[in-house]
Image (tube, rainbow, N blue to C red; front, side, top):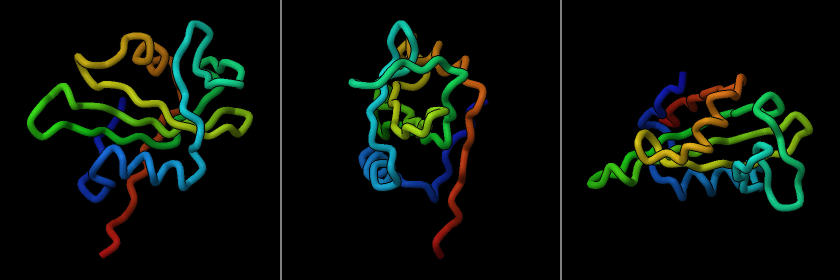
Length: 113
C-alpha cells in the first residue's frame, strides 16, 4: 500500500522532478502494452522494476491537480520517473501496471533543521 509523502518533502512536482533528475532518474518512462519503457529502451514487466521512492501531490484548489511521481530503477540499472494522476484522475493503464509492481519503497528524508 502506498504511503503519503510528508511535509518535509519537496513541495512541488517540478521541485521533486528536478531533484530526481539530479539524482540520476533521467529516463521518462511510459506504460505501454508490453510494460514500462522509454524511447530506445526495451519494455520492462512489473517484476523487473523497483519503485525506489514516490511522491504524492495534491492541488490546493483543484482535486484534478492530484498526481504521483514514481522514482523507478529497472533490474538492469536504468533509473527514471513515471508520473500519473492520483485517485479518480489516474491513468488506468499506469495504475494497473503499478498494482503489479512488488517492490515499492517510501524513503522519508529527515528534516534539515
